Image (cartoon, rainbow, N blue to C red; front, side, top):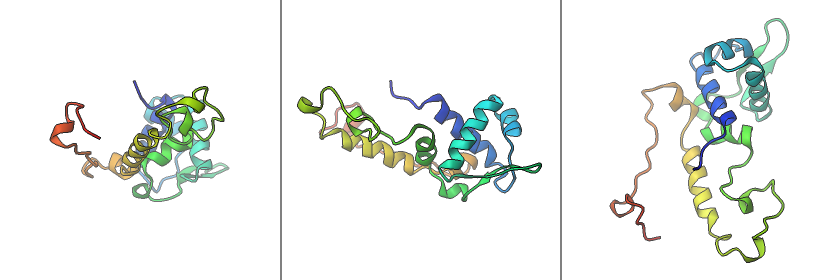
Length: 154
């Protein structure tokens, strides 16, 4: 099963909750209360999202986090990559990994990029704004009739 890490999922949830008031200054405590996440988890994710340029941080009595850009300009891929690093379906596509034990004799090594690019493109097509505003339509991926039963000819 392929799924997002819990931390990426939490980051999308947090950013969606913050997007209900996109101009506000959000503290880790208030986001934790709204999300049900622990304050340390929220702080850690906010730092990661800030480092990635998705949030701005302000220190001091009135400190907290604000959006670095319009939520409609932040795609889900950016949030995931801020937390988990580059999207890579296999080790050979993960730029942070140096070697794969099958690298020299893998028959699929040069083909995984097609799937990896499709997943990344799908995640880039969905904005945080679409998560925040339920009336914003989410992008739907349409398959040919013959592909619906996993019987595609590629």
